[in-house]
Length: 309
Ligand code: MN
Ligand code: MN
Image 1: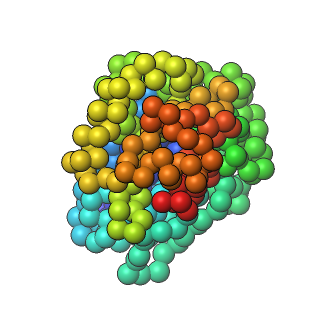
Image 2: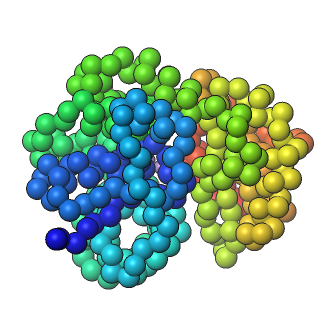
């Protein structure tokens, strides 16, 4: 039997990471490469659960590390520190991604598709079209869900014309009302009541290093910022503990209101006040501040923090 190629998105997988892995496997299959397999690097969130159970699709198998020389395809990420344990020694044969390129190095030539679209699935949608491969209903819903998730129903500033076009076409193929479906899906993902504070701060956390220091920007989506702020004290305690254990210098916890497209950030760290003042022109009060119109970590939070840290 031919050697398996593993396809996966980043750790703390979101809907794009999961759906794009599954879709990439299907696309490879339809292109005649039948030996690839989607897997996941962490628990499925509630939003993704909603998508998969609606479609009656099983979640990909969980894997923790990989062996040296394992062939892999990375989707929705490229940075090694967001990837699986052992990635340095894997054989990366392809990357399909929409993030900055950093902290990646390969021994051998590879396929690398980088587009600054709002979602990996938009890149995959265009691959279907370019390869002249038909998209069925399930594939359309998987890709549409990823686009809705990453662009917050096309409201995030990361949204491009390509995402809009792709989502419109996918909605037609799936024969669903994207607005209705998308809102239900996003809402399913914001039910955070039964997550502990520890789970909340790790749910969608991204680590980045700057000048040898480790920083984290975590984000949760909600329909009520107030609800999450009720837990501020416990959240802060948990964040401080996490910062100590993992030697993190700055921790930004963004609570994003997906209905009104705003975020409240809780920020802990030595120079937190100074950094936030420089980055957003706002003062922290009680360790937090409101950022109007800010929803995208990638485009609106990370670059500003990174510049001013
Ligand atoms: Mn992602
Ligand atoms: Mn993505």
